[in-house]
Length: 487
Ligand code: ATP
Image (cartoon, rainbow, N blue to C red; front, side):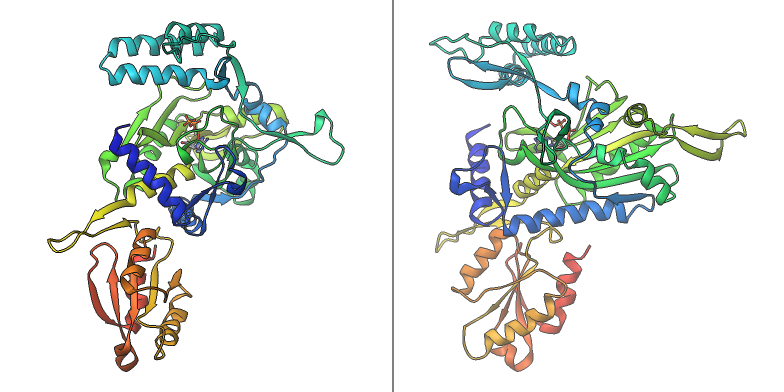
């Protein structure tokens, strides 16, 4: 990360805290590693992102419905899904520094360093060696590579590593008052399985016809070995996932469709297209027949925000095997041979986006330190140029002064608007200062009520992005704001 981008990222993090977007969890006790709380503006912004996703995925598609499954699930779910046996990261400890690392991450950092230095051959060779070791689950080889690369081995020289072990990322707890081993339950590490186990219930109760989708927004928990980059890698986070059930053989076509549709969803917020890129997975999970990530260019480089995966019939077949319940779909439509397609286990295309990464992306994208200096004086402002539909507060209402009936008039206008929009009332400080505070949280409109308002019911409306102002009838406000912030 260059000095300037490092600085920018730090500024965004402190801005997020100062203006009530994101706080470290239980901060009065010095926080909890990789756990964060969303503040008063953060939770509004997060809710607006969720609504944008839900509306476009569920409401705009006749054949997609949404559910809200519990975080706790029957423990066999995670046996069937492969998480009990396989959801782990290779971990290694440095005995001298007492620091714990993800073995693959250490090597990936080294590969990135080689690439940055233009040593592409060395980078490719190490990548290949690491991939081979991971594929063969050869943990001693990973350790060898770390030692060979002299990672974390500066002048003083430390090679004192533990062996590499697999570390399961699922959090477990116990259910019921009398706990024994049989009562171990997990905090779900992904929301997808809540959809798979409800596939039959939804299909039957909703009389869903293939192709159809089930969507869900909810918390997921992963005991990440190392957490870094603020809310990019958290131990408690939120996912917005949709599983789309299709006829076997059509998965490629649907995969391509969802891959494109999802990128369009991101770009519709007005983000510059060059900030996004696809990343194709060459190492596929055993159950997948295609996988792409949508990556965004954060200040610290391109990072995955969303994954689009073609998961075949793996999950439903596994649940059929472990539960003994038939996960088949009867397809009455006629095939080319004139016979119905009949019974089959549907194939699944999944779109899975991290809400917290989407939140950070939105914040970084919107954040601007704008220089407003003129020849006469130096001036600047920090503004969040959020898309108006995502802005936490849609409009702020200011009485010019605290007397002459202006606060009452301002509140009267606010009372009408607050039925439809999240509105903030502010009477403290000079108008200029109030503008700056609203700019900092991304409020698209500021409305000032003055003495003229009492005479002709007009107000001054000031636009966040251009900072221009105009006089408009108070009765037009609902339309002016609504035009910009309604879905
Ligand atoms: P990564 O490779 O970055 O660990 P992943 O491939 O394990 O991510 P998926 O299991 O595909 O991620 O989860 C889907 C989405 O959930 C990711 O694209 C990401 O946005 C989000 N996500 C995954 N893990 C975390 C985490 N620890 N904190 C925040 N978001 C996460």
